[in-house]
Amino acid sequence: MLFFKTLIIVVQLLSALGVIGLVLLQHGKGADMGAAFGSGASGSLFGATGSANFLSRTTAVLATIFFVTTLALTYLGSYKSRPSAGVLGSITAPVASSPAAASSPASTPAGQASAAAPAPSSSAVPK
Image (cartoon, rainbow, N blue to C red; front, side, top):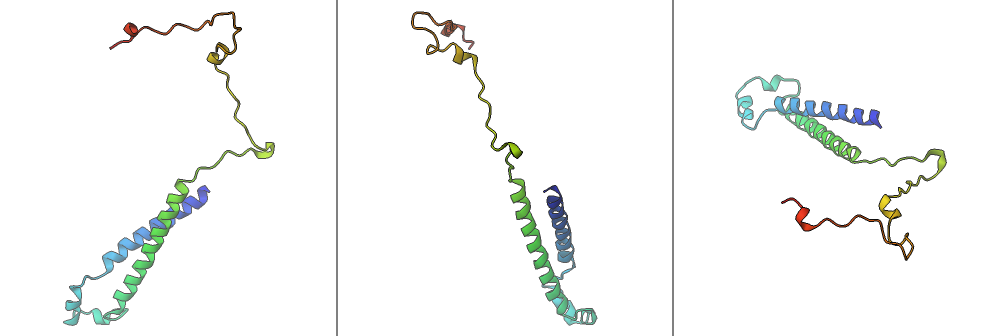
């Protein structure tokens, strides 16, 4: 489980860095005017508008990967494993006996008084 969680964290980190890099590479809407007047973008690798389409689709894919890995890490972080009994079957918690249960009125004979301590008076309570 730890290896799987570490793998998801690495994928999330790489997708976050990829989204940051691709957003910084993309041009804004005002940058298209500069390309129309010969700023050299038409001679680039993807052409005048090809890079915008490729970068925006790649950014969307990386953002989706980031979102899915975030949900997976949230699910794995909230997972609580149950204690396994192994070959013994089911484990039951031992019942702890309290000293108050031994001196309860039901356990004393009818003729004997209870040895419980008297209740403190209201004047002994600090204010």
